[in-house]
Length: 349
Ligand SMILES: *[C@@H]1O[C@H](CO)[C@@H](O)[C@H](O)[C@H]1NC(C)=O
Ligand SMILES: *[C@@H]1O[C@H](CO)[C@@H](O)[C@H](O)[C@H]1NC(C)=O
Ligand SMILES: *[C@@H]1O[C@H](CO)[C@@H](O)[C@H](O)[C@H]1NC(C)=O
Ligand SMILES: *[C@@H]1O[C@H](CO)[C@@H](O)[C@H](O)[C@H]1NC(C)=O
Image 1: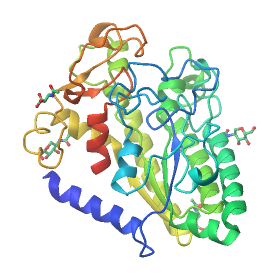
Image 2: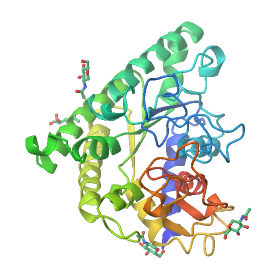
Image 3: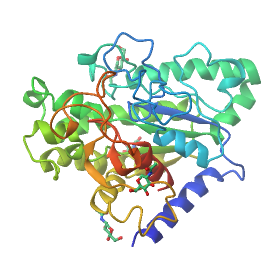
């Protein structure tokens, strides 16, 4: 039964959002292209999405989001009553606009500094935290150190890293990493760096963390096509990496909860969320229609935009025709990223 799980997750999130008896005043976001709102637009990189048809369902069109509409943090922010959280790497993100939070996420980035370097410039987690430090200084000069510290304590920190450390590092065809590390050793090394990074965000003032695990990487259309499998089933070896990372991450977060006083680290199992939608896609739009107004997932493995078999070899490029008229029927927008419809479901979970 899904509903009770939903309810308990919802109440956990509510507990987080009202732990101090007040709603979440701001959200700070760290991550990769799943939540990047346009931080890469001004970088020299192939990992950008600031052109149509991206944004075809977003008010005002393309922004740099790798999606037809809104990302999962856009939807989450709306559920928490927050305005759209602006990208750090944009000259208009200053003054009052940072008071509800800032988004540092950068497409192709990861926990490791070398992750995603194939594409060009990006902000790895280390640099996202340095950018956050600049925001903290700016908030302190605007509000005073005490008030800024209180704001940070009550804010939600959304952190979602790790996807690219596999698909755009360890699992790349010419990666040297598998010769140096077994999957287990590589994962432990990632978790060790990630632990240090999360502790650093705590040291900088964060207390309430929602940490997204790695999704079922073997189910993204790009991985399915490269494995030579028929569209219609996931690559289980690749999914094994996600499960390994998530189980180590979950333990690490429990440890941080126990060790860092006043902290709340909540693990969001994006893997199960995605598998549930993919496996039970026919339910979404029927049984759960009342919960999921406007979400009708029908095509679980095919992307809406991007050419090739199952439209899943290339990214979503400007001149490619858009094959799906109704984006609400798809899980995947392009060969890597989910649709607005999926993100709406995920945020509610
Ligand atoms: C990334 O590089 C910075 C600067 O050299 C270094 O301090 C940091 O530890 C590196 N991060 C990782 C995960 O290797
Ligand atoms: C938590 O504390 C225990 C015992 O002091 C220590 O062994 C462990 O490494 C700590 N974990 C973290 C994440 O700091
Ligand atoms: C699909 O839904 C059923 C019934 O709600 C549930 O038991 C099952 O775990 C779901 N599948 C996945 C992969 O989550
Ligand atoms: C999109 O597809 C869903 C499910 O098939 C349908 O209910 C909805 O009316 C469609 N929307 C448009 C604009 O065609």
